[in-house]
Length: 94
Image 1 (cartoon, rainbow, N blue to C red):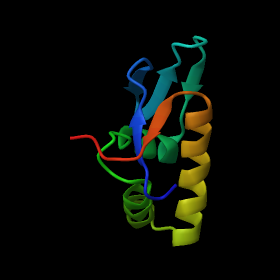
Image 2: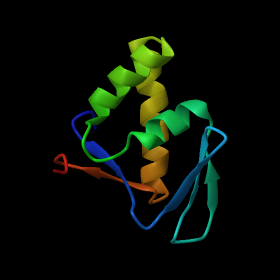
Image 3: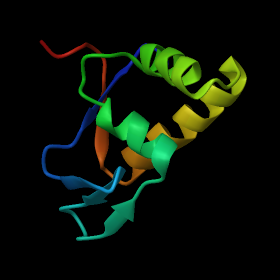
Image 4: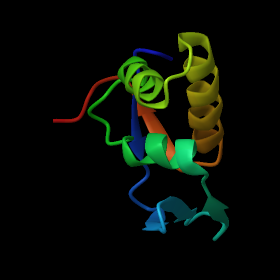
């Protein structure tokens, strides 16, 4: 999974309110609200950075261990993928 490129689903409406992201899934109109670290990751899911690159930046900016950063990021990204909020692409978008 580390070599994949997360990209937000363009059919998901998203806003950042007072520093925290919220997303509304088009499939089921569910509201998903994200905490600070999830917002950090969500805002960087642009299809241009690999999961590995996201984890490294997350680790540096949040000053957590590599293991903690990886566990948190993978849990978030997997959950978003399961809810169809984002895609995990094989290649970076141009």
